[in-house]
Length: 236
Ligand code: ADP
Ligand code: ADP
Image (cartoon, rainbow, N blue to C red):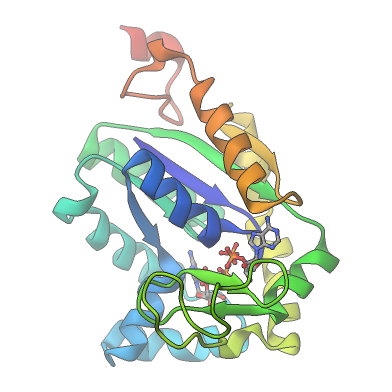
């Protein structure tokens, strides 16, 4: 099963991904986490991505597609994945769909769109703290760790991302509105979008997502809707 988490920076994708992957035992694939890992390790992808990320711009499509496809072909993703932060452009969405169809003979099951107002997004990004070991996001007011400044699971010292500073966060939101929001209609038109109210407590957002996933008809089975194919061609 391939699921996508779609939403603006700060909508709660990472937070929900950490809970959901535990609940439904599916691999978590976060493009942002993979870039940060590549930057830490000084790989060619990391070196290329750094400047774009610092400026709040999207990394070029071909680079992110290559990185994600490589990751999707690892054994951890054999039975599916929860994609967090990818795709972010129509071009990436088309590439993902083509690759899933060609290599995995499977389509995207659903796109979970977490909707949050802009003012709330900026407040969330400015108070976000992250665990450097497990990447779990916390918020100093909304979702604090049990011990101030330390990850609940790892005990590691939390850090703030450079690109969460106000000016870069505003640029990232602009980029989201221009380049990523068209994906909402793209997936809605294909009947794949599950719209979730992200402005509720974390546990309630999780519950709404799980309820929406449980409502997927059982007869859709593993081979879910493939973009570009009619339902008849799937049944045939
Ligand atoms: P994204 O991955 O979409 O950028 P995160 O999951 O990192 O978003 O969440 C952004 C910030 O908002 C974090 O500080 C997180 O603790 C906080 N947050 C996440 N979900 C909620 C929620 N439902 N209500 C309030 N704050 C939230
Ligand atoms: P957030 O959780 O706040 O939405 P991410 O951690 O997902 O942010 O992404 C951080 C940065 O990594 C983005 O601002 C962008 O520069 C880069 N990035 C992540 N995913 C993609 C993608 N699918 N396409 C292009 N750039 C990406």
